[in-house]
Amino acid sequence: MSNEVILWGSLILPWSTILFMPKEDIKRYMPVGLFTVVLSVLILEIGISFGMWNIKETVFPFALLPPLVYGLPIFTMWVFKLTYGRFWLFVATNAIMDLFFDYLIIPWLASSGILDYNVSILDFFITTLQAWLLYGYQMWQETIFVYSPSTSSASDLRPAAAKPIPKEDEPHE
Image 1 (cartoon, rainbow, N blue to C red):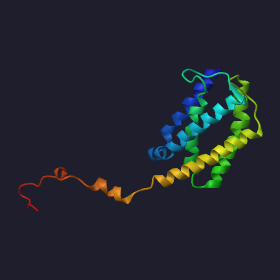
Image 2: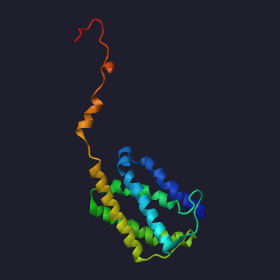
Image 3: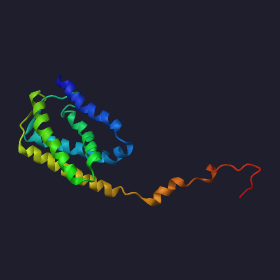
């Protein structure tokens, strides 16, 4: 399989699964998904600057970072949809996914020539720390977007012009 197919697949496949996520969950977990991209780009940039890894191949228009980074928000949103509110399930799921990613996917991408990367225990620490930051961010998001009962009745209000016109033979109020 060519590296270009792998790279485009790492972007297109995750985003195609969003079609199966309910609209309410997309709205609820999109901020943490976008925060995932911000953190991942920062971690990649720091790693590149310190020579921890080197991106050898990417696809246009993603000149510096692999498209895999831009598929991560969807994985994050699915993990939060399935585990949020059950912290230890989130921790266990994330640890398994981080181990799989750090010790199987990344070495496979390195052997394919997409990046130059040496896996260490520090990688697992970084991805675990990132997961805990994401969980804290989602908890914060849940507190700032609180349901307000005062605005829920506003949709029931209609202007007088929207009321039906009474028929001639009906008594007027």
